Length: 342
Image (cartoon, rainbow, N blue to C red; front, side, top):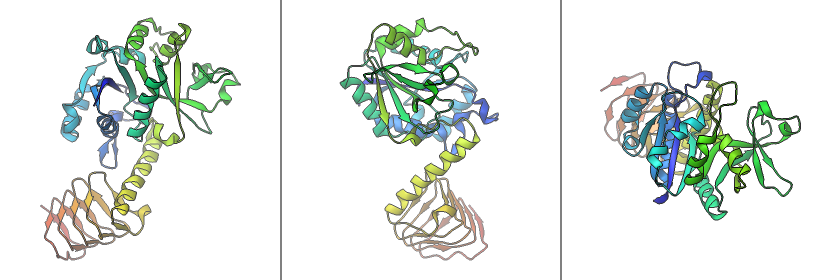
């Protein structure tokens, strides 16, 4: 466990571009709430203190996490942001919880489900190694439109972040962007947050302004640049959601295939994150495996079969059927066009 590391997950926003009455971070990706992927990575990092800043429909968020992600419910402290006044204001709500904390603070949004543990570990490691007061996780993308750009000096030191709307023509050609993930030294973070002003049309307090304040005081600001820009994709609308779903599905199927499962046509197969499948099982096209389904070894799941929250022993054959909350004994063949619900 990183005893000198605290993590703040920002999950208070409305996510207006999702066009949904449902909190953005609770939208499903391969059978798990979006926020679940972020919390899972944070849990693996092993930080000493974990905070989840909630605001919009906070009771629903807390309830869904307790029901669908019970492991995280007791491991993360919920902090309430009563007024949604931006990322800087959200982080400030944790100040009393971290009043005497002298370590590093990792700040991450709850809508980056593709982030990986190794990336966050390396970010914190570099932050400490370089003795920065703040380190920004960055990446380079071909079309940086709408992202904040990383401004560097002639000797390649980080000078600050400029938002798209405030960027000059030359600054908009910069392809290194701010991911919205940071590592701060706690003392400098909470010493600078009260100095942030809401001098913008939205009337919000931006966390990026902390970087500017720290730099103006002569502090060392660093950047940890990663090659895989997909890791920092933020889910802002349904298009982003669909893209993330596809990428996560690819990871799930690849993991299963490397463990000995045959998936005849991955592009026509849907398997949720919680499903377990034994080796030498064959999955035909058009199959959908959902929920807490467990499938044994040497099974054959035929075309257009849907299985949800069910248990199948070894050597089971089933095709063109629907099974829900059903237990099938080993070496059983399920007749085509069956509908079974336990």
